[in-house]
Image 1: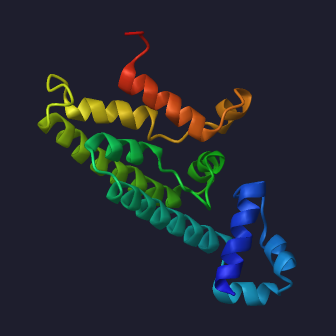
Image 2: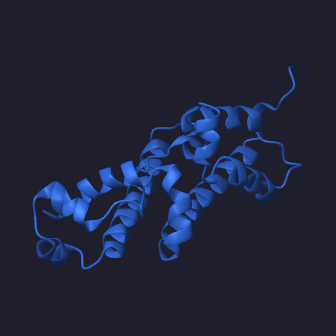
Length: 183
């Protein structure tokens, strides 16, 4: 039943956002009493915390799986910059999470730090192989990547420009790796 509650809650979050779904929505959807729901999750915040933790765990696992499949530093970096699963927390919900559930930001920060550590290791590998310019500080490269590709995207930007998160990430990677000039 716990898994079913999380599954239904995840769908409601995707549909209505973190603040838009209610425990009544869950009990109605699952035809259960609030008393039964409270056995598994004493509060809405506890339920959200569980969903965020699971999303963080899935995200880390997916990045590691994708890196495992890669043979070159460039493919690894591409994987780090491309894998966004967030099955329970779409990008548009991250701003809401930050504003109204600040205690959950630590988990989101964990994902970002994990990705940054992985990316730094891959950048250093590229420098050591001579594929990445060694006159650039890898910390500044990482900062650039973090501030552009690894940061949460604004849903408003995506919808007003009629693009998906994957299209945005691909364009950002092209811009970072190849610049704006024809060569």
